[in-house]
Image 1 (cartoon, rainbow, N blue to C red):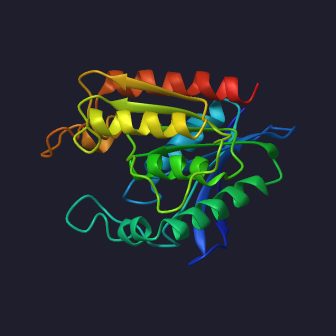
Image 2 (cartoon, one colour):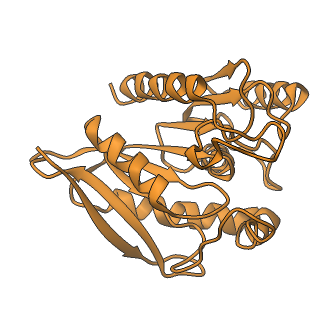
Image 3 (tube, one colour):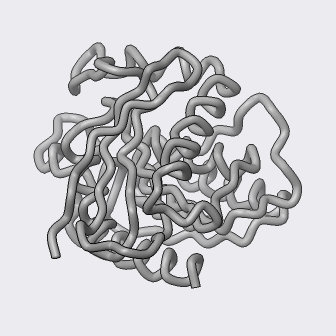
Length: 240
């Protein structure tokens, strides 16, 4: 049984958008769908690999495009070029996430009643926003995400189960910010859990960060391995 990659172009506010689907080629029944939301750089090969690894777990995954077709960046001073406008307009970000989820939901191999999302860094914030906005996911996983709240009110209760995988030494989200997130999710009635990994900072899953000049922003293999396993167990529970 092989894993298939398929380019998917879909519409949405500010689109078109271009993502990549991954699924087992011999799938004959509908499978749960998992949206993969990229980090600050936008849709790229690392996200396609995450989608393939989810497909190996038995899911149909879409490595989503939140910025728009052809809008990608690299690490450096211009990395946040396409992220900045979405940070300033969280309602637009919400609507683009909804469009990506709808594209996954509409794929003929996906069970539309069984959807989840995972995201990395900026994508981790996106997953939290999907839950905050009440988008139709059963569960969401944030890997070394960003935790600031949007300028619209959370749904209450938050229906999606949430797993937050956090590097304890993350300079972007120090312990007080993590505690504030826990309080927010508690107040919103969410079913949530936080896994904090010692000796790990921001970007602990990012293989491009094996060496880094930014303190606290570096790949950490133990946290990467443990958080992926935690995600796999979480999704198995969510889709049971």
